[in-house]
Length: 357
Image (cartoon, rainbow, N blue to C red; front, side, top):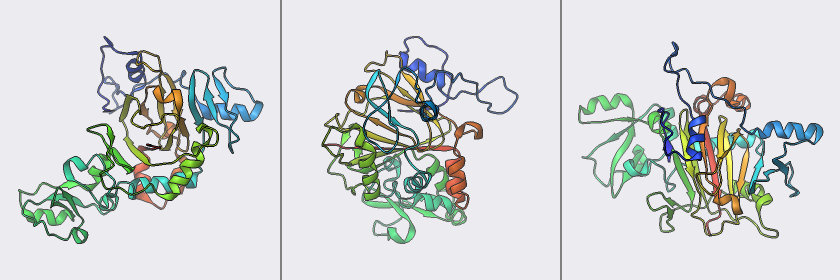
């Protein structure tokens, strides 16, 4: 589902969704004398809900396609006439809330029993962010006994035997050529997803209730219930049971897909954006339907319920350059937390919260 920024020049047999993905995807100018100079892209057709919000506050005017949803929420909620069940809440999260959930996404959400994309190779990894901050490396040791105290050496397990541990980089040199260390910083940068609450089995594309899991943290649960209200059927309350956290670096994409594994599509997916600005594509029920492109900024929230759950959607681009990332407020708040600041300057985090049953 994730993609790279390698250029593709042939549009033969491409769907309308894929053509639009290609239009906005990050490519580099091969003829530029500067190293890795991004190609210019026309953003004139990208919907800008921040601009719509400013216009609405100033004079009550909105473009023809954009509507205000009457839902008694504490701020304007916008919808699209052509996409029933889609809701956009610009700036829904305060800067303090953005900072809180950015920290949690890096330090808490990847912690076992939550699963990440690293589980397939390394098993559950504890304290990845701390290990990256301390410049540690992950080492495989086939001779390590299964009874090793994983809590004392930062050990991670794959199966019944503990074969991986975080250690100081200098100590790896003493182990000889057979030792193949992996930098914790690299593992953090290659973190692509983590799952909260009920665990999603990506290989089978369903929820595996037999996997160990913790409930979604209460603070996130309460926030999701509040944010979901505009999209909920009258008299019903949202019950957060699972969440998928996506991590994007420069050049990363999320291909067009459907979130169709939950039982009741009348209940919304609550999607929170943190970090660098991105382009979000919202298509129709077929990949041949031309998608609408819109900016997603840190603090924006999107809800998809009902018919909108049947629409293909994806993220073809994040902006990490200073001019377009639009994360000044986050940078000011993280000025004393250099490791988080360094990460968020070139990254985007998306938290998708779902009611499964």
